Length: 177
Image (cartoon, rainbow, N blue to C red):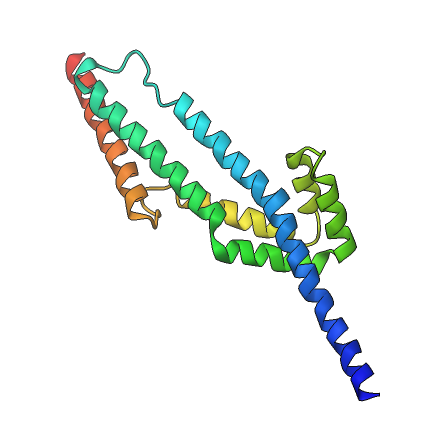
């Protein structure tokens, strides 16, 4: 009788572990994938906007272009690092396992093959507390894009260098007028 009770207890403890495994898969295949796609979109957008306006003086154009390109590269690295942050991933996976049953998580995984990732990710994140976790991480990333609050030394340096290059260029423009 004790053996049967022990097996029942083992089964009761196995379900959350199975749910956590499924939650990790849902995160990797849907939510995390969508976040990576968004970072890739930002990266392409940054690259498209790295071109300087035509009215930038030739005397400072190369320096400003170099600073802006370095700044955008550092910003993309910052975003990628934030999306991959283990504590964020762990918190999201834990919450997915708490909010959804194994069956619900399996259903999300089955739908991921043919569904639009952005739409499905939004649906997954509609569970209690999930959107708040994602929004907190996004806010943390946005807050880190400020030269004064950036915790990444490379990003802070790139932001300051871009600001200094812009200021120098504006000085050249003012002197030319």
